[in-house]
Image (cartoon, rainbow, N blue to C red; front, side, top):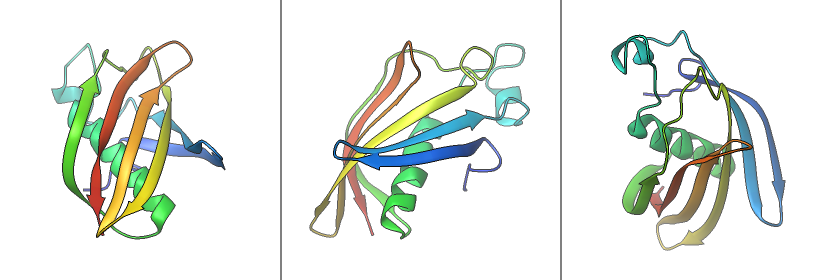
Length: 121
């Protein structure tokens, strides 16, 4: 299930020598937050991983699937109330059958998730 337009909106995207950056706005009214958790919404880790996947798909212009996750550190809780905008930074490298992905989800003050893994075309 695609989360863009339902769980978050893309605000802008940029690319430089260090990779690509996506600025996103979390949609606090999304019903995912009703179940996770009522009155105290937090971003589920699986949604963070899906955001990284969707941003990587934008970069390569193809659907991807997760081949394996080498590391996924959920460092602190992201919440649409406290941090309604996040920055997703992605570095990708072509490898056999897909891409090696290194990504972070952060804002100006915190890193919420670090991700390393391979995605397959």
